[in-house]
Image: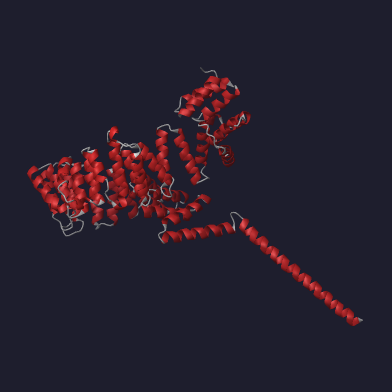
Amino acid sequence: MEEKQRRGSRAGNSRDKGRRLVIWLCALLLLAIIGVVGWRTKGSGLYARWRDDRLLTRAEALFREGKLKDASMAARRLFQQDVSNVRVMRIMAAIASRLGLRDEILWRSRIADLDPGRVENQIELAQAALVFHDLITARGALDRFPAKERDSLFYHETAGTIYFGLGDYLRSEFHFTKALQLTPNDELKQINLARAQLSLPEETSRMAAREMLGKIAPSSKNHRAALDLLTRDAVSRQDIAQAIDYSTRLSKLTNAAFSDKLLRLAVLEISDRPAFTNTLEELKPVAIQQPNSLTELITWQISAGMSASAMAWVRTLPPELLKTSGPGIAVAELYVAVKDWLGLRNWVRGADWGFRQCLRFAYEARAVHNLPHDEQTPGTIAGLWAKAIQSARSVPSLLETLANSAGVWGMPVQREETWWEIANGTSSQENALMTLFREYLLTDNTFGQYRVARKLLQLNNRNLAAKNNTIYFGLLLKLDAPDLVRLADELYQAAPSEPTYVATYAFALARQNRLTEALTQMEKLPLVELDKSGINLTFGYLLAEAGDRNRAREYLTKAQAGKLLPEEQKLLEEAKVKARMQ
């Protein structure tokens, strides 16, 4: 009996242990599930960081592999999730730099804004800005240099370059002098300083520059740059004898470029006509040896007002010399210079300009654009420009060239179309959109401004300014866009105390026939804010709608004194009728 009890007791203990084991296993499994779910659902926690780091690492790897489009798409996904991720911005800046796009300035600026104390960020921004000749941005980067970094060689060299580009030669001289003091035997620093001094009005500074340049030995690789500056200085002083001497020595250097020979040609043109004619004829057989030299000579002749004689010479050349894009484009410009549009169309038709083929289509479109209307076939220009855009898609920087060329050529429709092509692409979108916005702003194109705001919001749904503009312009245009109400709610929730956004939110409420709520929101704003342009129009309109005519007249009077969009003017007129101002 006792044995049975012991066996029963052991069996019971075994069952209890089994049950406890099962319970423990279930508990562990439950904890694991809770942990995984908790880890994955913690939006800004471990899982989100792991996911973003993994995608960021992938984007960096794609960039190193040269897969720039894929790297850009991955980085943009990350940027939309976190607009303050500096690592993402560095990838985008590097991609833009590799492609030669102005977007690099945009990304470097954002990085510098987020981390202004790090001098490397300001250096990278200044360098990018200088590449694209954006001197204002470059100077802004220098202004944010810490005081302890403002006596560095990079700082003084960059400052000297910026101020020279801005025409502030005195400041340029100061910084280049500082740079030379840090490296007194550096001939490049001497040349930079001399260039600034030669631009100053004081003869003592110019004399010092000539003396410094004269000391650069003929055996030095920098002797060429010194002779170039001395030649140009002599021309500016109308010392033709010295200009001829310097330019002749320059053109005979072993490392002379074809452009140096053209500088001598320019000096001879203003001084010695027979020598000029002979030298020009001597240069022609030299120019046809290299496509770049041929391009330079044709371009120089156009700038010298010799297009007709240049065209006559070009027609004697073997066609194969003019097939490549450089000489081909130069000849196209010749046809433009002599306004031979039919000749231009025939010249570019069937040409093969390699990676610049887009320009071939663009020049043909330009030729047709300038032909008499009775010689144009409907749709030809649009078709040719579409081909130009299609050809340029593989080289993003050429799309900007197309857009800018269309503007210079007086083809606004094609200019707008090309900027939108860039805006809807994967690079230089912000630059394109800002260019379009400025144009729409100048031409009072409300719908164009709405399109830009919409696109900016699509690129970054956290962009409150873009969200505000999308709502406001959409309401002004009375567009059938159901999401405007939702966007207005989001805008107000994100910035309930920002006056402009509150006014837009109130405008949206009024469009939903919630006038009392709209006025309540506006009444919360300080009086000084209600007087501001844009806000006073909204408030005056709401007051007029509510029948508060006296107060409505006050704000509508202020609103009509400002510059209004056509749709704002229409809104004002409607409100004035209701306020009985007419």
